[in-house]
Image (cartoon, rainbow, N blue to C red; front, side, top):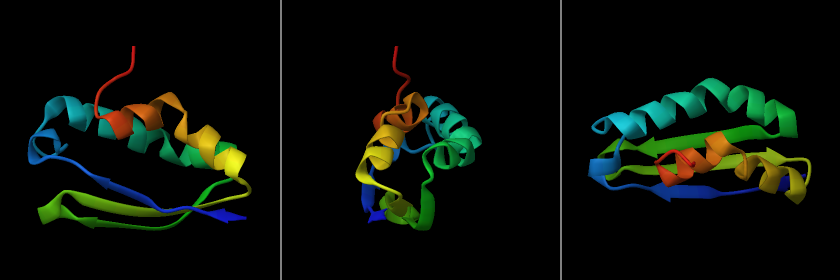
Length: 87
């Protein structure tokens, strides 16, 4: 098993709470997240958000590094991490 640590921070202007495009990307990701995690056998051990700092910490557990990397390359995950749709 591989345990990862994902730390993200975004500017207030890019927050899904205040940015319609970012909110749409966020909803797309959330709607597909369970399916993507299952596809690669990844479990989310924990996730924490500090809303006032626009700061997120996630701890995924995967069967191997390849599964974690493949999950990170899924379009919905890439969009979420880039805050804009990929063309």
